[in-house]
Image (tube, rainbow, N blue to C red; front, top):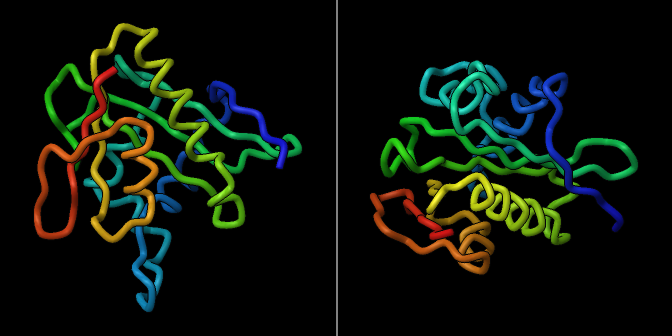
Length: 157
């Protein structure tokens, strides 16, 4: 599948709402939550006012001029928070575009962009049962903490 990775344009920031919802891990057999879940404060931290805070960076994946995935970074007090100098990442793709290498390419491009912008490391939180844990490890993330449900992962740049 042909795809292109590029910076997200300011006019496209609204699409991060879709990808925030897509990033919610739903275990097999569990009903998907209502879309309004993204309006909860603990999830709004990922997208509210995106582009206005130091460290806000985003990339999208396009297939036939359609955005099919996004990865974005911001310094925030989220589930994967390490410190106030370490951006946390969120990444997701529409279901039909998963397991095709696009997520890995998005992540690798974001890691390069963060390094180029002077960051030393980045973090994320991921449900232990999420298949993406393997991809995160493959691109250089290591588990640095965990709770009952999630891993906190860190990647040195």
